[in-house]
Length: 465
Image 1 (cartoon, rainbow, N blue to C red):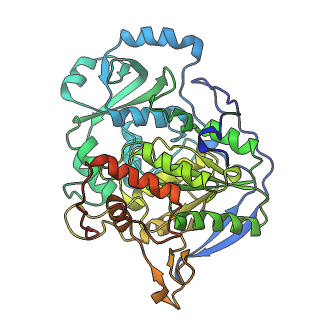
Image 2 (image 1 turned 135 degrees about the vertical axis):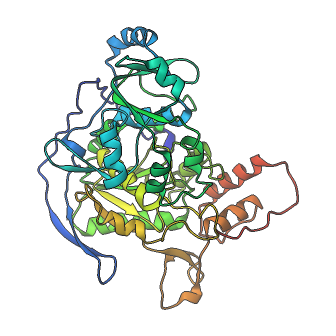
Image 3 (image 1 turned 90 degrees about the vertical axis):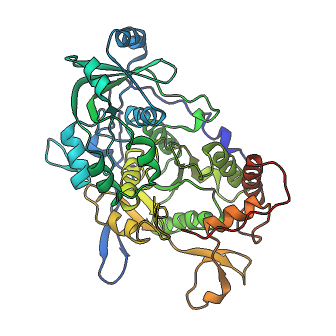
């Protein structure tokens, strides 16, 4: 079985410059009708296309400077007022530079910020609407605003004082933190991880403008080969002759229930008439909260899933989505879906409580578990994307494997929560055979084993929030 690490090494990818738009030549689409129901009252007709979906706005935006001009842009950056980027800021530069947020061409100006907060969408010059549910903004403090003065452009530097980008034709406006948090999360409760990390103590001003990114963003962590841009992903899907792409985002290890869902989705697409649907297994690679399994360990686990044949490497593309994680539930899941359109996906699998988390203060979920899939079915600007609701999978004791839940015999099913899974791994205990491939489970156990010295003390199982 080919390892995940070499799945993409044989395909050269084109480089694109700041002012060039990715050339996407699609075959004429074949359309089919599909009905999916979320209940008696909610019903939607979905459009299915047999070719790669067009990016939002019709063109894939890339903001990288042409290689021959990079030294010149570095010199220009050294002469401009400077803004130092946080780790999360740099991740957003990465997102913008590759076109995940197309048609955005830089950090949001105030009009874009307000449309995002109040409408979860942007209206383009031609009157069309694209989805945009989370603000992609850059905060500065009073002293930085003063240093910028009357300049119309600024340079963005990373934590090692390297010039990363130039922000042109800038606009500075107030940073309404309370409103931003309330409208993004639906609460101002203390303890929201992203808000604590990136908003609460950030500057009182936001600065928007058009980005010129001097060079591709690299992290030098051994995983850069998996960080395929939308252009590179579209090239890979074309190389594999994909006539449909279905995306599955996760920030957790893959268990056999996930694999069952993804495999079943492919079978459903084949039954609809597609010849070669390709799975985009797309783990989130930006900021995550402290108790999530780190990206490097998740990628090791995903590699074992492919090596063990749980997923087919021939019909699966594994890549890292560079976005930071908000844990903003139905609001954020729209961003996750929208970004995958720009990568070429025309189907998006949505599960229970997508992008959700436990309430930071109270012992309950922050969001209704079904609202994410319902919102996606109605969200402005996502009409072209086909939403595939999660089927509930659990461990079937009668079959000794993960299976779709059968409500006629609930006593036969065991639900293994993420909390339960983590507790078992921390205690070096095995889940039931068939829950996760052995190689993948060993990676998870090894991760938790790396956190604490060897001991015989078991971790008490936490009460899920």
